[in-house]
Image 1: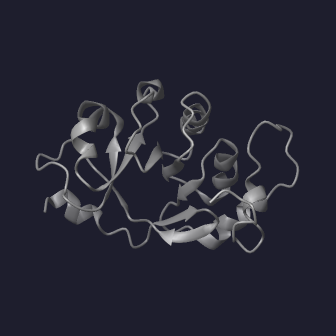
Image 2: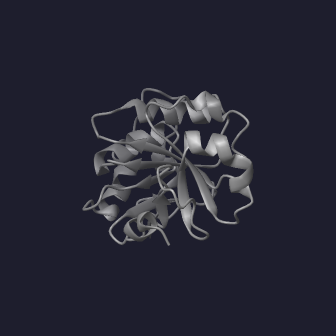
Length: 184
């Protein structure tokens, strides 16, 4: 196994919030600089450019595949190229970089992506509510952040001025369990 796979397999302190539940994050970032290629097992976040160049071959690998979008990527390039993808992850390299909010909204509204949309990187507790409003439904928290505290953020606001955006609290009751009738 490559050095990259060894160093990136230790995600014990990364937590993901998905469908109102906390889970240990199993996804690892793949670097296109890794000469040994994609490992034969696991769940991998594949950079957009690498995905677009090798999507057909990657789909036959039989491993978990996700496209990783960075703030500098043009998400329109993903139009029609998401078959075989388990999720789309948007990277937030810094909590001060808000471009990922717009990318998430564009992936939902323009590309029509209805699958899992995950925020990764410098994802802070106080941003999950706003990320959900932009269409994200999965959040890998920055190490050291309390995932139970993050779950409570979905109910931080009871009134929203922008009615066309998602109401995060609609699918996550106070206990953190998806509400009856909420999308699974």
